[in-house]
Amino acid sequence: MSIDYIFNKNLKEPGEGANLNILTTEEAEKARAYHKSFKEYEPTPLVSLPNLAEYLGIDKLFVKDESSRFGLNAFKVLGASYAIGRYLAEKLDKDISDISYEELRSVTVRKQLGDITFATATDGNHGRAVAWAAKQLKQKAVVYMPKGSDPVRLKNIQDLGAQASITDLNYDDAVRLAEKKAKENNWVVVQDTAWAGYEAIPTWIMQGYATLAVEALEQLQKQGIAQPTHVFLQAGVGSFAGGVLGFFASRLGKKMPKITIVEPEKANCIYKSAQIGDGKAHNVSGELDTLMAGLACGEPNTISWELLRDYAAAYASCPDYLAATGMRVLATPLKGDDVLISGESGAVTTGLLHLLMESTTGNPARLRKQLGLGKTSVVLLISTEGNTSPRAFRDAVWYGKYDYKNESRDKKQED
Image (cartoon, rainbow, N blue to C red; front, side, top):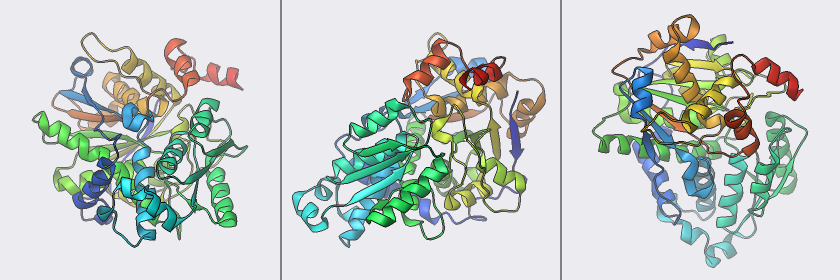
């Protein structure tokens, strides 16, 4: 079992395709300035893995480790906190640049705004981020999780004071449930996907995610590297990928790196949209049962899709074993490289890069050649989460589950 991929034959230069105005340097810096007003803020590490780079046959490899972000073990809080901050600022008729986190959580502002409940659907990380941001700003959160969600992730959300439950729905139907309940109860939906009539908050979430791209670029430049040549970005609905890609396209223009969008093969709505090739976003349906729970989404964010359609170099649809491979590679590094604890959604890009550089035939070798990956390549990966599901981490890293030869056997055992 290997990968399916599409190389973008309609790739456009930045500015010639989808509008990049929502992810300019100014907008990204505005988001980071807001994040800096949190006492918990500090840039997450950009980890160099020189020995793994040499082993794979590339010049340099960097992994941005989001496991320490605001103490929440994942990057998602960047989007949720900024979107909620923007929402509250607008309720006060203020620009987010003119009000800090401390002011938004003050007694005076709390009295002005009254009780607000933020609702969302999540496999875990986004819901935890919404719950945390709501608690910090002295508001409430209600979280709906799709079937199969890890109870550990549910408890992490509940421990932050949110009302949270695991439903018997897939992710996309859980989103619809959150929207329905929000309308019935006058709650505010904070979802990192967009649809007709719901675009402001998803835009703010994407801008919040751009904070990590700003950090990564600065961290590379401090090491004398102007920008990476290649970036691999995970996509569920595509908001994270769109936020990072959009910033790089806006900031770097024609010098932007070649960006590959990476999805689970059982929840590959961006890949399918590119495959159909009519320029429109298309959904995938079904159980969406993948090890990569954070990427188990069947309906693209309509805003980010246009950015990914026009400016991504390639789209890869990956089996679960690649996520497990990435987890093992990062957790058991070559001598001299740092240990990185990455969850299943965070590590799939490492697994894919490993496959591309190790393969001599088939789709992986063809994609490597088309991307121009080789001895002069500087590759940036984002480990979007740490060990957020101990059960999945142990299965993959300790017990060797989800490998190439035994993936189908493991799936039968689960069933």
